[in-house]
Amino acid sequence: MNNLTTKQPEQNDPLDALLREADGYIPDNGFTARVLTSLPARRKHSWWRFAVLSTAMLIGAVLVLWQLPAAYAIFSSLPRHWSAFQWQTLFAIVPLLAALASFGWVVFAVANEDQ
Amino acid sequence: MSFTDADLIARVLLREDQNAFGELVRRHQSPVRGFLMKVTGGDTHLADDLAQEAFLKVWKKLGSFRSEGKFSTWLFGIAHNEWRMSVRGRKEVALEELADQPPEAEQTDDAAGSHLRMDLAEAMKALTAAERAAIVLCCQNGLSHEEASQALDCPLGTVKTNVLRGKEKLRRRLAL
Image (cartoon, rainbow over the protein chains, first blue to last red):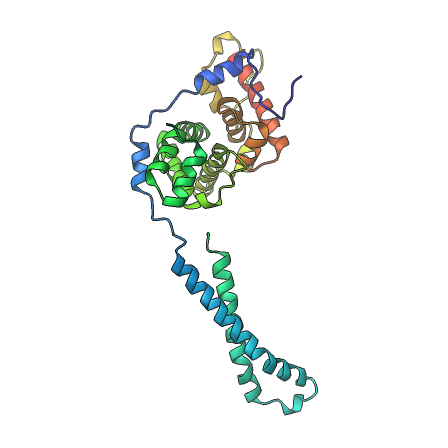
């Protein structure tokens, strides 16, 4: 049975035989050495990098949790008191936004560590 | 004692062992350079440059290799991608156009008589790039159609068609 999804070359097909014969070995001739000399340093997944990122993530998470109740109170009062909106309100949100941004950045950095 | 590809990959990932990587390169350089030489139409220098770039990518991305598949399939995929990018970079004909492009004046069965018998290397040049890549992977490097479709990043049916069509053209050209 001729199953096209598995190995294709047929043993008695002259073209397949010719193709196999024509695929000769190419001598290295210093190719491997050239590749090895041009290798860049691979980025190591060092323990300190992991520690720094984990600590930063922890600090970010704590800041977010710390700011969250205050921010929730501000946001929930906004629709009812638009007229009472003050710049101080906006400044109160800034630390939360900063904490959220740093937390997001750390998550992004950890997620893209392999690339 | 000889190490398997998986052993060598593990050594590279765990110890950043350049000797192990060198052994991987030595084992696979011939098929990869041969493959690139054929898809570039016999341009040895370009093929070697692309092969070198492909192995550098392998060094950087080895951590993302999934051991369920064959290392050679993954490697051919990277090599093929390097070639594709070089074609795009040189603003040459896009791969899709290459695939659709009729090779050169197709010879009729009559014209392909014994007096016009070409050697295989010349006959391969008459194939489209996609046909050549599929033939080299499946018929010369022993990849299955599924593996070739992974390496070439194209549908399985396209690989099968390219192999069949390419072989048919070669048969006509070589009068086999």
